[in-house]
Image (cartoon, rainbow, N blue to C red; front, side):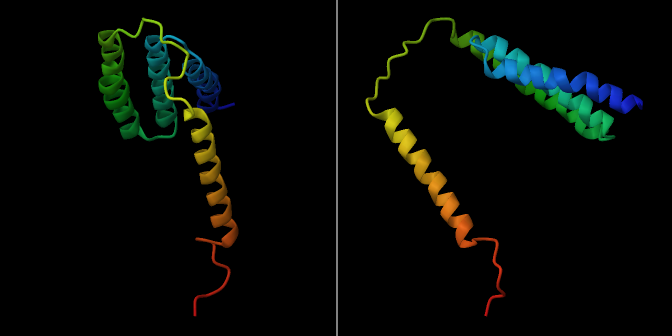
Length: 123
């Protein structure tokens, strides 16, 4: 087993675990911190692939600049207060489900019609 494979198999579970933990985190600050961990693991993957510029950009721009702003903004806004779980706009969820189903059906019809996947040469 090469060193690249060892680094991959060490950082891949950390990357997947931090992404899943970020999605299911109730605290917004903790979710942002898990996203920072995920950005760092992705930068290690870039380094293993030999893309040192992308490694540096990932660390400096995403994890360094943008993601440092997220926890500060979250803490500044004060998201620690509880949000009510009652929907204020009645009918919002059924409308969203109907629109999502419509877009999915439109995509299926477009793909079946061959949009972008022409089988015949144009006349």
